[in-house]
Figure 1 (cartoon, rainbow, N blue to C red):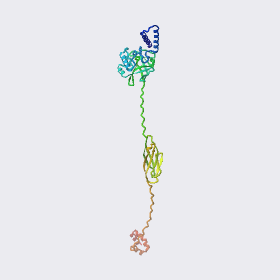
Figure 2 (figure 1 turned 30 degrees about the vertical axis):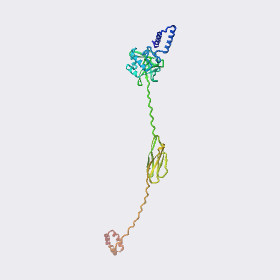
Figure 3 (figure 1 turned 90 degrees about the vertical axis):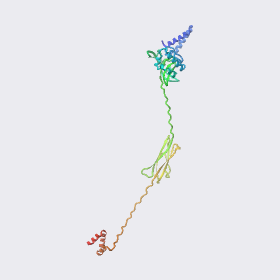
Amino acid sequence: MTERQNHVRNLWQFAAASKIVIGGLSVLLLGGVLGWSALLGHAHQVSAMTADCNDNAVIRCGFSDSSASSAVTAFTAAYKANKSGDLDNIYANYGFTSGDLSKLQANAKLGYVTKSGDVVLNGKVIATGSTSIGRQDISGSSTKTINGKKYFERPTSVSFTTDKIPALIMMNGSKIDFIVLASCGNPVKATPKPTTTPKPTPKPSPTPVASAMCSALHATLRTGTRDTYNYTVTNTLTGGAKALSYSFDFGDGTSPQVTLQGSTSHTYANAGNWKTRVTVQFSIASQNQVCEAETPVQAPPQATQASVTTPTTPAPAQQLPATGLENVAGGMFGTSALAGAGYYWRVSRKGLIARLLRR
C-alpha cells in the first residue's frame, strides 16, 4: 500500500469515527476528504505544524515543532519509548545514539529543510544536498539496509511537496551532528556548506612621515689640480620628500651657483682656506638645510732665479826677495836663464839647482 493510499485510509477512518453518514452528505464529505488528500500527497510531504501519521514516518506523527525546547522534549520521549523498536538503529546510522540525548538538550536548535535540499538555521543555509530516509518506497528512492531491515532513502526534492519542513538540528560548534524532521521523525543527511572565514582586513601601513635632511657636502680636490674642487651633496629623504634645488656658495666672493643636481665643481682664483656652503631646497619647505665643507686652496709655488757665477781672478805671483840662489844664478847666467829656472823653482828647489848645475 502506498503512502497516498495510507493517508486516504486514515482520512476515511476519521470520517467514519465522526459518524458523518447521512445520505448524500456523507458522500459529499468523503469527496471533499479525497480531494484534500490528493492535494496534500503522502504524509511525508507536509508543511510546517502538520504531523505525518502514516507508515512512512520513522516516528509516527512526529514530534512538536513549536519551539526547540518542546521539540527536544518530545523527540527524547519518542526515542526512549521506541514503539517501532528500531529507532535506535535508524538514528545510529545517521550519527545519533542514546548518549547524544544530553547533547541534544544543550545544542539542538529549530530550523528547517527545504525541498531544494538546503538546511537553514537562523536564516542561513548551513548545508545543501539533503536526503531523508523513510519506511516506504517512493519513486526516486534507493534501498538502504540497516541491521537487516530495508528502508528507503531519497532526496528531499523527491519526498517534499511543500517548500520546507521544520527540523531539529543538533550542532557541535559550527559542525552539524544530527538533523531530524519534526513532522515525521525521519533523519536527514546533508553536505555542510563550507564556512568562509572572512579574511581580516589588513591594517593599512602607516604612511611614513615625510622628512628631509642635508647629510653632508663632500669636497674633493680634482686630480692634477690645486685649485679646482668637485662637490657632491648627500641627502636623507623619507616619506616621498625630494630635493628641488641646490645653491652653492663657494666662499670666495663669486656669485652662488644654483643647480638642480646635487653635484658641481668650482675653480678658485686665489689661495686660501675657503668654506663652501650649499643650501638645499626640499619639497618640505620647513626642512630646507645648509651643509658646509672646508676647501683649502694652496698658493702656486714661487718662480726660482738662476744662480750667477762670478769668475775669480788668479792672484798675482809673489816676487821672491833677491837674496836667494836664483838671484845668484841670474847674475851668473842672465835673466833669460832665470825666467826658465823660475818654473822649476816652483816645482822643486832641488830640481832647479840640479838643472842649473847641469848647465
